[in-house]
Image 1 (cartoon, rainbow, N blue to C red):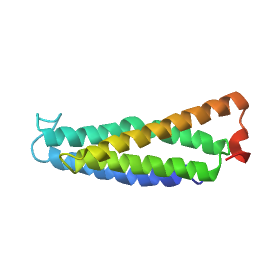
Image 2: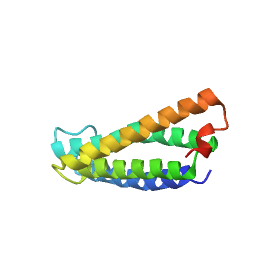
Image 3: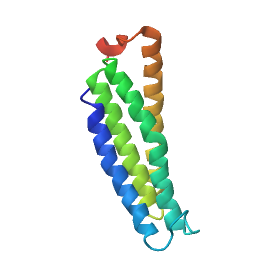
Amino acid sequence: MIVTPLYAALLTFWFLLLSAIVIRHRGKGISLGDGGNPVVQRAVRGHANFAEYVPLALIMMAILELARTSLYLLHALGLLLLVGRILHGYALSFTRRWQFGRSWGTALTFVVLVVEAVLCLLVALRGHDLWIRGLL
């Protein structure tokens, strides 16, 4: 595999930054939960939302890569996921109101998940040697 590790690493760096933002808020006296503070709520949700969606997307990407899916398609999915997660995380963790980032970040993430799920289903139905390889 050469594509999935690239996006896993880049997404991990972003996750660590989102984690640092939550830790910084925790250092200000909110050790658990969000203390009812809307800024902390947004940072915690931005971090948690990443943790909820990215692992599944990377697992499916790895499956598709092992099934020899087109590198171009894998990079497209990886870039969309990375941009989507950056938009979403930035909107929640760095700004008070940036609906564009939150909406588009969510939409891009969902597009990646749907495409990967459909392709994984095709892999399961067609066997381990992904028939799409020659088409995409």
